[in-house]
Image (cartoon, rainbow, N blue to C red):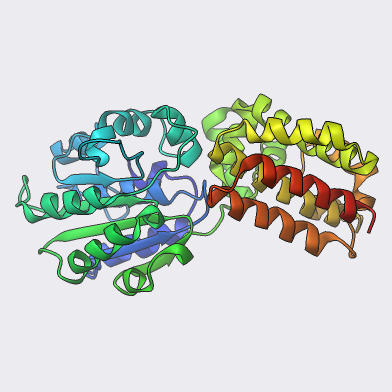
Length: 373
């Protein structure tokens, strides 16, 4: 992947390119950004640039033997580490799922953990970077470069490293072999060990601007300007969210309908139907539950803002706006803070593997109280 293929992020690209050109590229970079901001795409573009035998000032050439191998995801000195589902027996590393990983990268460089778990068919389990993987990384980087140049290790979602794996990684980050580059692509850097953060150079990857998103939608998806701008606004800085509006309308509709159902049933205090709602949410995978809760928190914020009558501050689809027209008045200064806290608490419980039916029924009961606040 080349820098020109990365959506937006001109400032981040300029920083990375300047470091390479000046010979000041650190041995470990932490690219920290939200889902869809392009951290993994930037990591791949940087890896391609440092491997390229004939780079220009602003990008890899895309034609030399090194670029061809990088583009085909077969360069022997570019390695990947990512969350996996630890198998009950035997050693489990990223190599266990490497074929699926390369297939995903070959299809699209913008995806999230939910997408990845669908690819490996384990949507109902929690993915981690296990102890075995840390040893695997050390083994790979202890070998000499096949091409005699850089060795690059791209670690996607390093916050998924368990405690033992993270501690094992520290020594490698402290004493890397020459011409070794670690690129950590993190969505939640606050979950990383502080000792790991201190051994990397952090570069924050901001949400994409509406202009960058709309331009990319017009160029890459053929949308007219008005449609592209509308999609870009709702995407809230995420290329992945923008694409999902185009490709996953059914998923977005299901999330909205679930939110509407919860709020209507809570307002009516229909405990029997709220129990059914809780059961339907509990039947989703953990990653799907987190995605739904993220969406619902976003809807709470959007409905609260809707009350101020400033449409330019709202980022909702026409369907979401139609619901907000009648519902927004129930999300106000008296309950917005506690509403968002309850949904965030539910999300933490999902991550902590608390019983799903309990999580969502308790959330439904809280909604009954808060809607009357």
